[in-house]
Image (cartoon, rainbow, N blue to C red; front, side, top):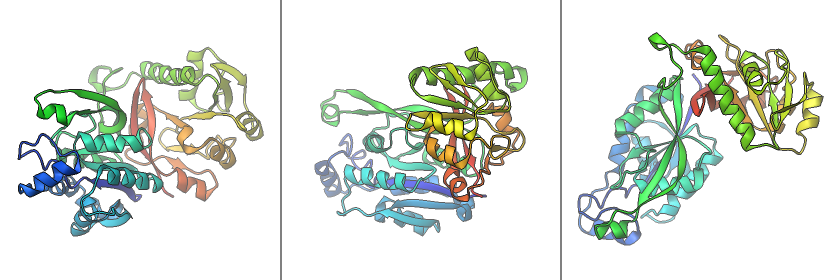
Length: 376
């Protein structure tokens, strides 16, 4: 198994005002008041419940975290391989510490950021992370209105456990909300929507299913096509490099465009610009232009590069960038891999290493799952 890179941020002061009826823990004054009244810090204890679910995978897991109570102390006490990426200046941490820790985790390309806190912490994480990497909250605060939190700390650990084992896990957009604590203490509930982050959830077949829970291939391919076409509508000036394979072919069919089943086509503003492109053709079209790549995997094998699509050379893929790679596949196709990761065999070991880790796979209309690319 590849090493799973888990980012961890604990707000050690999350929830300390709850038992004392302080209606939250935002702000240094409230935290100081809660501590003076004898408040107990429970965020680390709740995070421990989540991490206990990961103990069987200690050899395949490295936790990147902040020093002291923000994660390091707990991880080391539980025997996890731990790498400290941020150290707060003051003992009493602030919102800025959560944000700076999140910035550092992004620099280390973690597969997932697990964070413990409440709605204030979720807001802090959102300010930095947005949709750059998947996140999951361990509920530890007084206010848990946001949809980015697991139902319980243990359930958060179970979802991470599924990711480590390479199980198919759905990726959803979840709202980040917070209420005004000052007004809340005056008996007024004023919730505000801040945005959405990507959150892994257990796999659910929510649409396009037949009797027995099996996907209808035709309907699912139509849904996948609808998602990619919507992406093209959102980015009309972007060059879309359309890879080979029947799944990508279904998208081209929905667009009403000719398709090179075993080749690479170029599409801009939903129009076919060039067919059966070579490596040099692709590089010419994407040079100094916004671009996205749409590819699928070889069924039963899992290869995304290096098998029948050598036109998508390391130079092409590096120019496009990992963040602009859109993998499309039905969930049935992913399940046929039986837990094996996707494989990049581009011929460039450095590129293959950079591509490794969890990546969103479009599996339907506004339906994605997180799936790993192997670290070879």
